[in-house]
Image (cartoon, rainbow, N blue to C red; front, top):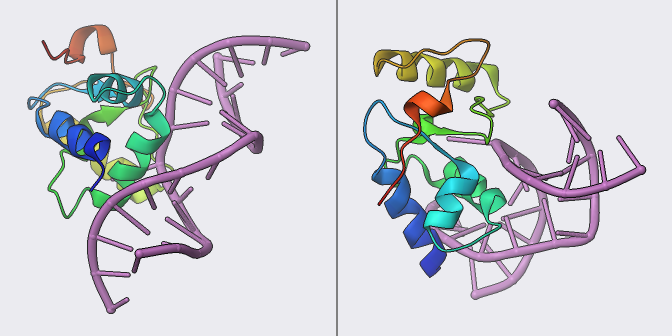
Length: 101
DNA sequence: CCGCTGACGGCAG
DNA sequence: TCTGCCGCCAGCG
C-alpha cells in the first residue's frame, strides 16, 4: 500500500469523537499538498475495511460532501450523536475542526 | 471570468 | 474475486 495512503488512514483514525477534519487538511497532514481528491477516494473505497470514522471528514467549507442521500443522512446522524450542530448540511469548522499537532 | 476543491468508478495486478 | 491507485477536470462560489 502507498505510504501516503497509510498516512491518510492514520490521520483519519486520529480524529477525536466530536471533531472533524477537511479533505485538504487530511491530505496536508499526510504529507501531500493537493491530495484532497485522493483522500476522498480512500474514504469512498476503504472506510469499512479500515474502520475509518468517515463521518468526521467534511469539505473545505464544512459541508457534508457525500452525494448519496442515505449515506449523507447517516453522516448527519452520526455527527449529531457526537454532539455537533449540523445546519443546512454544514457544520461550523471554527468550532469543531480538529488540528493535529 | 477564475481559483479551489474533490464519498466515482474503472481497471490493473 | 478482491484490493488499492488514479485525472488536468467538472462544479461551485
